[in-house]
Length: 210
Image (cartoon, rainbow, N blue to C red):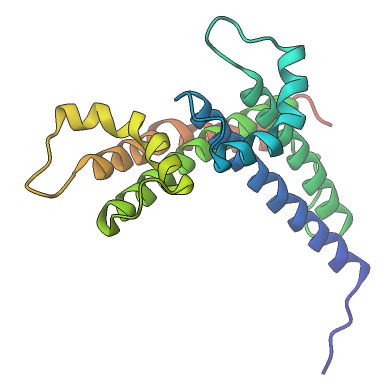
């Protein structure tokens, strides 16, 4: 027996596709921001790809919000804007399709808190992912001249190096990836979870309603 695909199904599918596309693009922006802090080789294919795909949004943001000193705020601003748009677009589409009760519980302050929490959570997830990949690569010893392998090493080293200074390897076992991951998980517990809890409180106690 076939189930008819309704307009609401297409709307829900569109909402999920938009959600995935924005999340993936934010991951790319985070990786671009992290790799830019370690003065990467501009001719590295990975660096060039990241630059080509993120410059269309980061360059205009830099013009509007010039870097203050050594800090480039454009990636943070772009990520927050994308998360804000994601929330409003996806929730509106889901409301139209009858999946949710709408955006009436989403408040301005609540959306900002949610966007900040999501951004920090995604940054931590990217760091964990990079460190895990670095640990796996250390077991299989790939060619370090490979652009992807080199980029992973460059991205992970700023997080692993300080830990290595404090906690030396035990024989051939490098404990620094495990320690970094534990620190990231702890940050999720003490920082991200309270922000999500605050968002839920604001969502059910609206003050400035859209």
